Amino acid sequence: MMNLLRLIGGRTASAPVARERLQILLAHERGLRGQPDLLGLLRTEILAAVSRHIVLDPEKVIVRMERGKHVSTLEVDIEVPHGIETSLAAVAS
Amino acid sequence: MAKVLVVTSGKGGVGKTTSTAALGAALAQMGEKVVVVDFDVGLRNLDLVLGAERRVVFDLINVVQGVAKLSQALIRDKRLENLWLLPASQTRDKDALTDAGVGSIIAELRTRFDWILCDSPAGIERGAMLAMRYADEAIIVTNPEVSSVRDSDRIIGMLDSKTVKAERGERVEKHILITRYDSGRASRGEMLSIDDILDILATPLLGIIPESQDVLRASNVGSPVTLNNAASAPARAYTDAVRRLMGEAVNMTVPIERRGLMNRLLGRRAA
Image (cartoon, rainbow over all chains, first blue to last red; front, top):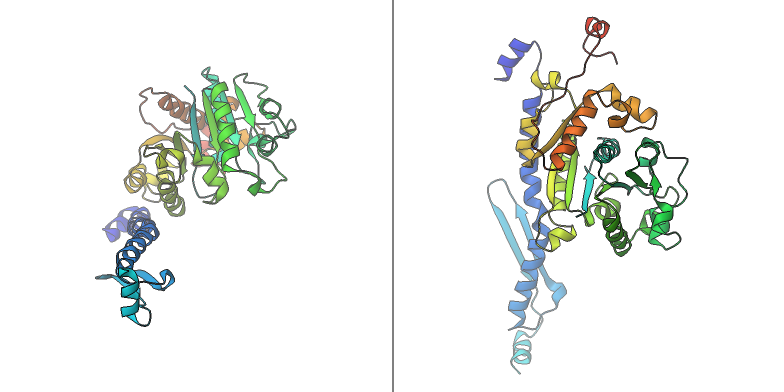
């Protein structure tokens, strides 16, 4: 198609390239836009759910999302304090 | 009822200030009572484009801080009695603008005018945020160029999330205004077409302003293009855009420059 346009017009029509690049870029950027809020929400809710059973340091709850070409992953890293039974008891009492 | 319109873009240099002046003047020419508000604190230019640069005494920040009354800061246009300007401060820090301060000024302007046009600074920082904060509608000025379209997309995202209307679960009505459009280049595939831009941004079109020397000529003499040369292609395009804003159904065309014979013989464009 590009070659055909080049033959007819005598030079490259660059607008289709611009259009395609923008479509790809914006699809990606629009996906990122809501992300910080989504992660914050996930973090709060995960923290609340786990805290019902184990006493946690909120600082030690890390939620991370990675978008790959084929697979995206959600990584939740929660550090459980020493003596998990004690903290379980503390929650129960 | 008064309407608050923000003229925004993200990217700088696409024609926000020129468009604010032209749209504001065109509305006033139709008998509407209009105020154009410059939000570009530190880099004000709306006064210059409107030819009112020597009449600025008080500014937006003076009013926010209670140093001056709104009526003292408003400058009435000498040619159009329905057009007023609220200039930005040239010397103050942009942090002097507060959300609550802007809110109360907009509320007061709503009681006095039919249209309040907020000329946003470039960027996505505080100033741009405050300019769009209380808007009912938004005009997103876009050039047919990749960086401008990308930034417009970003601004559309902000309009849908950071405005008072969005926070209330309502929608800010958005319009795309394409400026510096060259239909010849677009038809040769050298420039993004109108359809390309609207497809990508998924937002309705308000108008197409053709690339024209009349725009620069008007700003050189400090007169909105709709006033300086009402018959010129860009002036007709801005006037059509304003009629659409007012709810009229106007066919979407790209007004064509009327060129003299010499210009045509010498080529498409003189400059």
